[in-house]
Image (tube, rainbow, N blue to C red; front, side, top):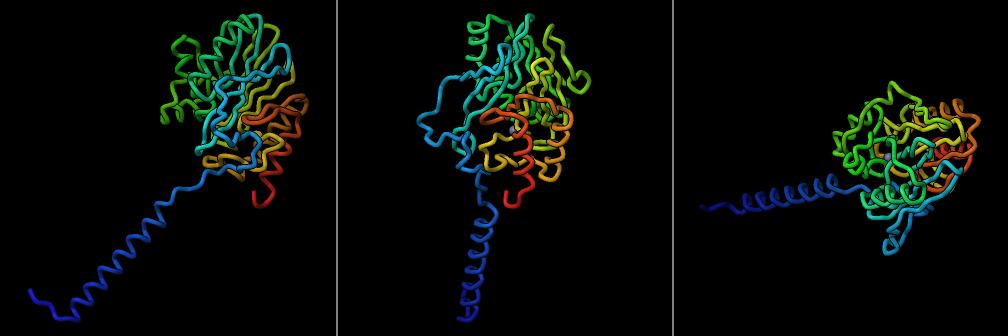
Length: 270
Ligand SMILES: [Zn+2]
């Protein structure tokens, strides 16, 4: 078939513009977003060769310990905090370590270090830094409790099955200690809850609360930045006598962690 020259030029131009548009579409829409974590965040360990293989323990009170595990997010290594509460009836675990192998370690440490059986697990929201070890609790027939929203989200995300009793039962009695859960509203995630230990005045804020050295809000993919400060204020007004506040990541401290979290949320450019 013969084409006149102008037609061929027009055809080539058409192909050129088509290719240009196609590559722009790809550049524009397939760009992978950067993980929303500040490299200066103290909870981050920059050298992934020093990925700590062992769970770390910090004692807050004789009966309340932080388990600190390590996991990766956006290709970098971070630490995560959970709690173990000891009573004469056994141990309660709040959030699992970030990996299954560190959860194996959690079980053996609770047995050797504290000589306790695990009574149940509470999970504070449906993310893997809180729930990665859930299958190991199931293997041991240990109950796993959450809110119904966390149960729904966890199921959708393949994070395991939880028993959604926390909407009804907000306080567990463990003899001399009790454990209370409170849903303050949307913050880091739609389902984030905090855990209060009235006997020791320890508040586990989880990922709703940032550590003092956190310079930004971390993973805000599911956060409600407008509602988050109000949710933290609800925690402040419900537990004004908290003596220790444990964040989801980083060092524990006092109530100023809650005020620091609000500051990060209300300060522009954070
Ligand atoms: Zn989270």
